Image 1 (tube, rainbow, N blue to C red):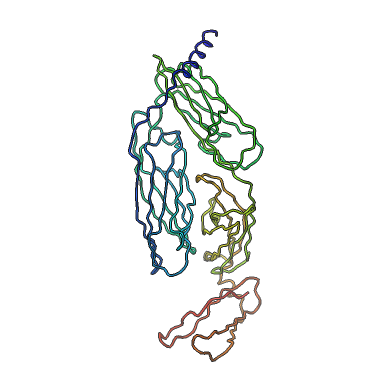
Image 2 (image 1 turned 90 degrees about the horizontal axis):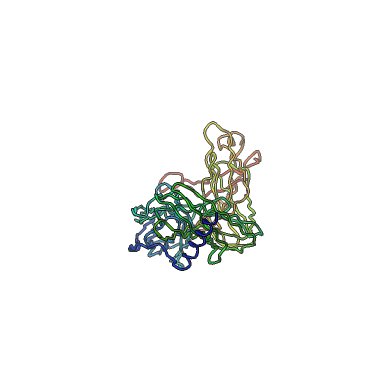
Length: 437
């Protein structure tokens, strides 16, 4: 026992006297520029996307990607707001997604920094063999109920830091990323060290940091190949809203007196305590009718809200809208009721991303149920449909009032199209559309 204690102390002293770090391998940065063209009828938007990231990427470390999108030109004469969302994908895994901002006639450029952790579970590369992967960037644009998508690939070089140790940092049992709201709570931090090399690790030291603040340190005793050790730390405090990097630094020694260092990081994101109130203007409608989902967030924030519909066990986005000073509103058209059914119930919710780094911090509303009746079933109930014109003679360009009455009164609003016979094309032409309630 005395001998073991002496060895650990000797190693600890040696690290302080001879600090060593991982020898960084130099690679040129990755820089990619793409031109994106989105069309809607005669309207065209031409964008330029630029991606920059330092190379190589190291497993277990924080990766930083800078993405800028510039609106170079457009042909529409109408005011518009193009909401942008970016998703980063390597292989089959989505690393992150983030709302970038919006492009308008007066604001033509957005720049965002995307941060994430390269998990050793997903990238089991070795230190001696750099691996080139394709980073797929999916850029999504949302405007006036329309969605536009463009994806492109960027080559990246991925390395493991060490052929000897596999190090992971868990926050309350979650690896790479964890989110919580501002509150007084205990946070459990775990460092898992596995000897994946061929040599015995004679000893070392685990240091854990929250940003630049040392949380604690613990000694590493001898570890044989294939061995795993777990080191527990904890915090009990109130953290203000923001991003915190939980970083473990492992200093260790191999036979022959070789000293090495390896690090691993996880992201802790703390968000403010928000509440969301959501409403729908009509809970019973006929297929083809519009519903308006609106709400507010307290305390107010600005960002983007995804309107999602439940499909089986998954939530599918059906609309995106801007959140301005805590308020949002979006109009949706009800889907058709499957043939043979009289009605269906659609379930909606609102999801507002809160993360500053594209993590899972988000605000989710209660579920909203909307009953959608088949138009055929409703028409079967209608016994009379009448229309009154405010005037039978009008000048070109003058307003015309059209009143429509449905009998018997229905518990739902009926979408009615008003058409007129065009003498030029000898056909019925749509004049307008209204909901009769």
